[in-house]
Image (cartoon, rainbow, N blue to C red; front, side, top):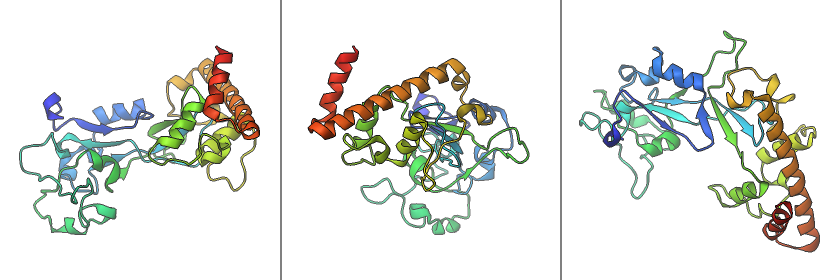
Length: 278
């Protein structure tokens, strides 16, 4: 925000706690010319080029469990000149919103409808707020050209998904977050979500099903081209984390089977396991 010193030439970034652009992409955003989204004169805050969208690789619980042939599209960057609260000089208007909602109206971004933007002929496109980073269509994905640079992947960001210290925490998240799964505290781990099914197979060293939505990269971390998280390049860390994931998946499978047999609530049983470990 402008009150804490952000300037129009700075870059606004919105990320979840488990997302990040790569170090190399951050550095390119700081120093490289030719990135249209970060050049105000190339878009004047119009929707086609204003937002820089990541091409994101997903690591599921372990550095060795990498989702194959999939890319996410968060986090996102927008130039400060196009963000509400930073560019307050009055040239760009604040975007209208539907009543009691963060959504822009149809024609100005809702449901990816930008038909009314063509009526703006003086470059006075609307500013973008924090909800627009995630919820409003616009911008473009800038990916590495893996044809021109065959030694690298196309990815510019990483999603470190479900890197918790217990499966109990993962289950709690799945039952309570924005897309809750009913009975996530009781279902077999591989039945909760496609992501967790892939992770379960990876941890158990089970082949992925042919019709499985998300499959893992065979061979794990060492088979993937850069750019990759710097911390994951520590072979000892990868070994220890993956060993830990295998252990907690095994423990989770045991106590879920016991809850089915004796009809004990799994969170109560987890406390018993934890006390035994301690």
